[in-house]
Length: 147
Image (cartoon, rainbow, N blue to C red; front, side, top):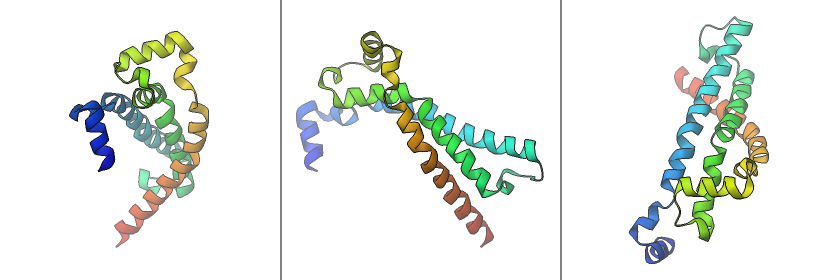
């Protein structure tokens, strides 16, 4: 509650939504890449190795591989938007600028590479965590379907 009151006091009621456009700019393509990559990899497994009729039939090991690829895609595709979002939310000089203004400023001052600072380690962290996420999702889904 204290945090909420401090934000409203400092930035007004609209301060509660600071950076929400940036979040949407990250989440929309990120989720498209995430689910699209996951389905694509599982479909390619069926096409390449055969023996499976449905996506649900793909073994959990391949599900983990698809999840790892999906995690890398989730962060790799929208990473520039996440960089801009983070700058708007945490760097005072960017807090009153629009998404596009911050994007242009970062490119002008740091080049395109400035939009990808930290992307490599983020993707490296995402691969195992998303592999496990999809493993347990499919394991749970299969278990619930069997009840």
